[in-house]
Image (cartoon, rainbow, N blue to C red; front, side, top):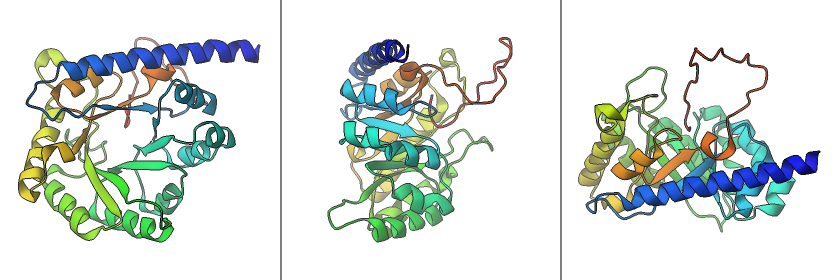
Length: 273
């Protein structure tokens, strides 16, 4: 039975992944020519999903994967099957990072990017930890600065007004880090019938501000925004990095949580979709 399930599952993951890749490429083709022509990166969010599914997507050519929880990322990235089958995997950390978990996170094999640096103190901690842990051969660690564009207290991220000073600090004082761009989650369930998502527009304008203040080319500052429900719109307005989970891997099964009744929409968004 297990073998049958695996074949069925891998076909599903492969098909779903290809469908999302096609949608990403079509959305990129609709971008206005005034935006930097950066091909968007699709981060497949494998939170709560078994290593088998990651390996399947990898076999289909996918390389960028994201996780929200440090312990889950450590376990998955260190999984012997994944290490053996996915030598070129690129892991993105997209969850809230506490200072006491930094060393554990930075020990992850094939860690590619930390998308959720949301304070100068956290940047300093990640910088000193990476300086200590990295070997001579490793490059600087790519980081993004997470901004709380929606102003919701439930969301992590830097207050937008601190964006420029925080980016400047990373560029000038954190020599082990490479500032890659800005990231936001944005409010959940925004209706595009009301016009472009204001949280994405806010991230675009903060990028303008950062680039103008620090003399950086726009195309050197990525924008990580957009999840399962809105990644096409995000790409059309300029996202270079979208975080898509359930549309690729199917809905998440959270252990030991009661199933909500259908009329109650209790999906609480986190750093991906």
